[in-house]
Amino acid sequence: MTDRLSAPVSADELERRLRQIGAERYHNLHPFHKLLHGGHLTRGQVQAWALNRYYYQSRIPMKDAALIARADDAELRRVWRQRLVDHDGEKAGEGGIARWLALTDGLGLERAYVVSTRGILPATRHAVDAYVRFVAEKTLLEAVASSLTEIFSPQIISERVAGMLANYDFVSEETLAYFKARLSQAPRDADYALDYVKRHAISARRQQAALDALVFKCDLLWAQLDALYHAYVAPGHIPPGAFAPEPGG
Image (cartoon, rainbow, N blue to C red):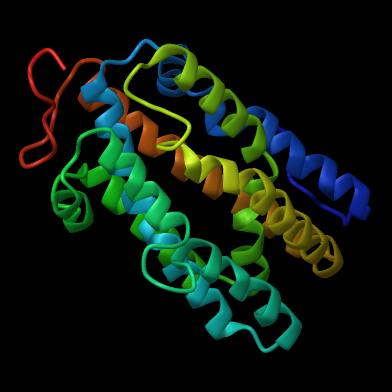
């Protein structure tokens, strides 16, 4: 990891450092994702991943609404509200959350159970809630910078879709439709957020805050996969009340 800033750097150098964080810390490097994309998980383990990830997906509009509520820049509000539409849709049954529920439906999970979030891991709940609080309480620059993991998401999406279609007979292009939409949405969102950070992070203090915000987000995503690995791969300690896959599946 690059040393902490003692003097401001150029916008290009700031971007280089942000991208370096992703190269070193983005969760595509996590062992759980290697197993998921390589076809090495059981159906029950894939169900556990999709169930826990739903909680993250369901809270994204909440963190984006919190950011919008704090922004006094009308342009930022106009651009950022598209994220709410992307995830919530213009009406029921549309948007990213609906597409994620189509994935959990396709994996055989009861929708009411998924939406209730009763079966998610405690670590998932605490990590995701911490992200919503971070965006609501930190500076607007840090809130925007924390979204920059979207710079790196097209890579993991491409790996995920190709790997899961090739290795699991219980998924299809239809059940993975969420990811197709994100291939265009994420780069659009990342481009705007990166430009915002480069324009507003001028001092060394603000630049370091932006870098730290991205580290926080990467750590949060990594922690969720740590919890999944611990509960459903090794050593296999599923917390009381959390989803337990059916034997053999």
